[in-house]
Length: 60
Image (cartoon, rainbow, N blue to C red; front, side, top):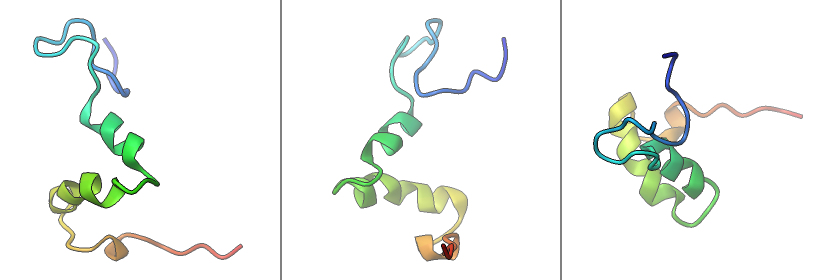
């Protein structure tokens, strides 16, 4: 059966066969004007109040 990861639900999903998973919507919103709105609920899931808590700058 495997890990069953990916952007879409599997065909045997009881609620939405082949439908998009929540991560699909987050990926779709990344880099757009909807990013803050869509990403907001995930801060509490990972236990942070601000994205700067987990963001690291990378020097070229």
